[in-house]
Length: 227
Length: 187
Image (cartoon, rainbow over all chains, first blue to last red):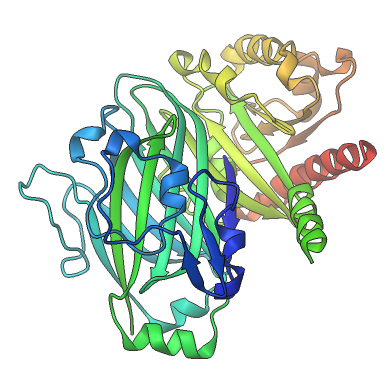
């Protein structure tokens, strides 16, 4: 796994998180974004959405940027867990079939056969002070081999980027079940920001974009509450 | 400031290593990785694909790729060779009937150009099982003494036993040290 993470410690450091040489030309000056894409903007067709495009987003999107049918590789997420790598404690776990802790998830899917695309997390407030988190994703791959499977995950509080993650799996074998633990170094948040996040449940959001060969195939969303 | 940032990034990169864990099915690859990671090893099932994780060892971040060893999966191993710093080959020391297979598969890997620079660590696993061959016997069976131009070492271990994790750690100590010495030499 090759992974790069960017930690904008402060808003003015955001230019570090978004490569200015990207074709989108995002420029951030003193926390005011110039030429960045507004989250409410109408997005192009999902076939046009690239990693560089989502890298230039400066807030959670209103809608999913691709339909469920974009997942032509039949990648299926079957389990997900979060652990604190420093204490090796499991913080959250969800698996399919059922076994999900009711109340901790919400589905916006129309039919029960549709995959869950958004999830609501409730974490204890001290989660915000954790430094090293591991998220393990179990997923199955369909009949085709997959090359360059890339996850780009962007976390925001309101329209401020807290953290952006980028991981690439160069190859997945057809008809397999795989386990992918990504390690996250969480940014250190100021006391004020931390309090703000706690005071405003579910205004901390993330978008997870999954690409194969730079083409968007899945988009999931999450919202977070810390109490 | 920018230069400092660049330097910091290079430094971080130096502290990262890519480790590929291979071996026949049921050798104990996943158990080894999970045990090193402090995870539960009582319910491990055959890996039909890969498990990837990141371990921190002696200040280095190890990106560990554990790829399933079933026959149908072995032809896909080559997709994971790129940029491998360390190859961990796991042997079931009590699986006497497949020692030829494991030697054959290992030597095929060692011919791979993309693994030419990788340090080789062999875990002679399942030492706790009756009839397990000793480290010396596994060394002979695998023909390790004849390896030329390869930095290798073999460590006996019993990955399922938490109290025996020292064997695994000793092997990883050696692996990380060997890779680090090579990386620094290149500078």
